[in-house]
Image (cartoon, rainbow, N blue to C red):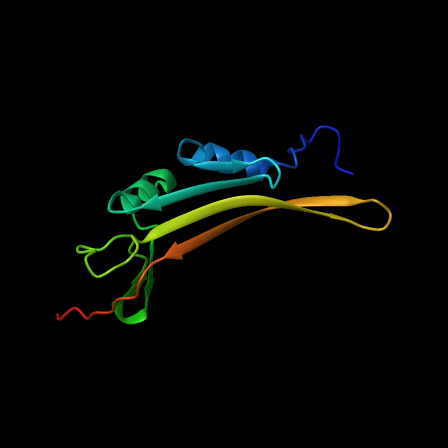
Length: 124
């Protein structure tokens, strides 16, 4: 047990943080499943995510030899695609109860990308 002068954080701090970050962009909330959903589509999706996360490089990862892997949420021409690429962010809880009726709940964040693959090389 922690000393009494150390404040305890509420067990739902992750949920509070998720709503604090994505609150204006939450499109769906399911009270039964305690699940929040945000969906970002089209050309503005990348800049919206950069603004929300306060990181313009949120979608990329640099590797050795100047190789960069990143997620593109839009394409210059969508004429060849059936669906607009999207990113779906969900937050939900799961609760487990043991035989002695002890329960524990935890929150999960999932990020799903609906994209196509593209590869190219830059000549230097």
